[in-house]
Image 1 (spheres, rainbow, N blue to C red):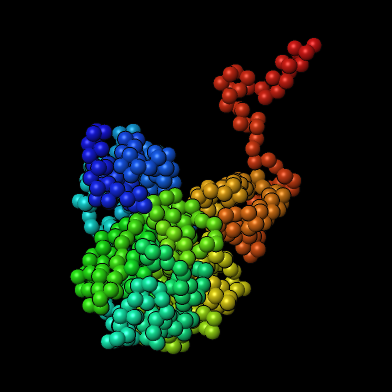
Image 2: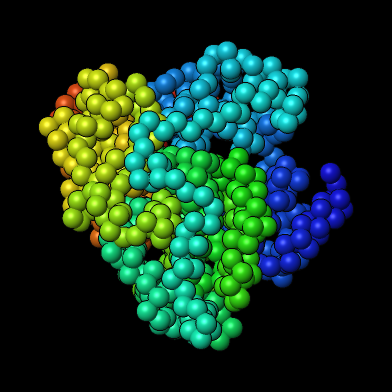
Amino acid sequence: MDESEQGRVVGGILAAQGHDPTRLVQILHHCQEAVGWLPPAVRAAVAAGLRLPLAQVEGVAGFYAFFHLQPVGRYRILFSDNITDRMQGSEALMQRLCASLWVEAGKVSEDGLVSIDRTSCTGLCDQGPALLVNLRPIGRLTVGRIDQIADLVRERVPLDAWPAELFAVEHPVWRRDRLLETPFAPGDALRAVRERVPQDGLAAANLRSWREGLPGGLAGPDALLDEIKRANLRGRGGAGFMTGLKWEACRHAPLPAGQTRCVVCNADEGEPGTFKDRVLLATRPDLVIEGMTVAAYAIGARRGFIYLRGEYRFLLAGLESVLAERRQAGLLGPDILGVPGMDFDIEIHLGAGAYVCGEESALIESLEGKRGTPRNRPPFPVTNGYLDQPTVVNNVETFAAAALIAVQGGAWYADRGTAHSAGTKLLSVAGDCARPGVYEFPFGVSVRAVLAACGAQETQAVQVGGPSGVCIGADAFDRCLAFEDIPTAGAFTIFDQRRDMFEVARNYVHFFQHESCGFCTPCRVGTRLLRDWMDKLQRGGGSPCDLAEIEQLNGLLQRSSHCGLGHTACNPVLDTLAHFRPAYLQRLQHTTFVPAFDLDQALAAARQMSGRDDPGAHLSAAADEAT
């Protein structure tokens, strides 16, 4: 495709997107899908068409891992580099594919056909090892599947013609409770809400309060907020903030003329080991979308977004279909369920490979077409969110729970769980167990009970909440999963006695370093230092001084990092040091500090090329000249 044709393609995409700069990330997605990568002419055309500085477009395109500023081949193959994939042999499978296709990992083949590399967790931990081919997932990799993929690439078979079974993604659920078991039909929650809407003379006042965020009548938005509070529903994304209080704050936030409130579903579950949102979006999308619509009614919002992580692009068509069906049924769009003025609609924004966009303010920046850099807070999104408008951001699981609460009531929901952690929790169980998949338990369940349910044996450790969570040993298996004991966003990764917990921590450290957005120096430099220290220990060059330096670095990151990524980057190391210290001590080959950088070794190649093999030769020559 020459530059003139690229310009025509970009022009069509910009027109379809309304030349809206806030849709820059989506525009870059469309351009890359059409051209194969983002060449300079495309980036320049986008900048001109949106009337943005070229540097801004370049900055956004360079921020996200799934945008390519250099050619990556017709087939872009990315192996999931999560620790569970490595435990299942992903590295050996990747090397086999590289050898078969005559391409080096991290590079493009000489004929420009294919590139092979690693990527962060793809959300298929329950069916790994896994990879993405042009963002299409292939799980349960075996030697046979790798050889099949190599043949398809060599024969240049279009992806649409690849065997469908390769791309089949399963969504196993092994234990169901309230969220996954309660019957729900599209519209159930909205009809329950409508029954609370005052009729006749009060209807107009209530709709005005819904649109403008004013206090409602005895029924209506306030009654719904009361049910959410009565349920004691807390955010399921990890922070655990009270959902009712968040929605109420957004509802009562000042709303300048011409603006609207917004509802955002955070479907960017990038924490390694987490995949429960994938299962919800694939199996109960109406529940999630209706929960968003219920939230819109509660806060007076007219606009909604689902921010779908780039690795879940394969869910996009199905979700768009559900949205279209709901519009057709009067469950989205203008006059929902025939109630004049009850207007709310949802659009899907696709992420592009940035873990930090799971943080709500970074997600909003990405929605606005920018780099996903977390904002300073306050102000918080509930008052100044998307385009500076009051915005509620909640997790997929939170919205699903809210829909059921609207139907069944807060008391029904709160009778599960504990006093401080009401309801149930979806767990993404993966690693060394017989039945990986999603499990729904009431809050307060013990770690030991989860291990028994999934068939785990000889368990050495469990990483709860992903790398940013906590790693516990067997002495803590009777502790409970709850906000007051061990909080979790959903990841539950199991390691048996065969696993080296140092290597587990090192994998997580590499993840944090790779995903640091680079905005603040403490995190940008600190995560790289931490990675280098762990690699030094792995090579056998460590000493007790290195462990002390890591602990000191943790304090610096805690005090100085801009967002939670830097705050938690040292967690995997500190937890495994506390519970599995021998895994580190066996790598300490020195009693005193040994530099990780050897200047003499670094100059060895240059000396050999210049014929100065003797590292002391230059000193002798200098001494001769002096005499």
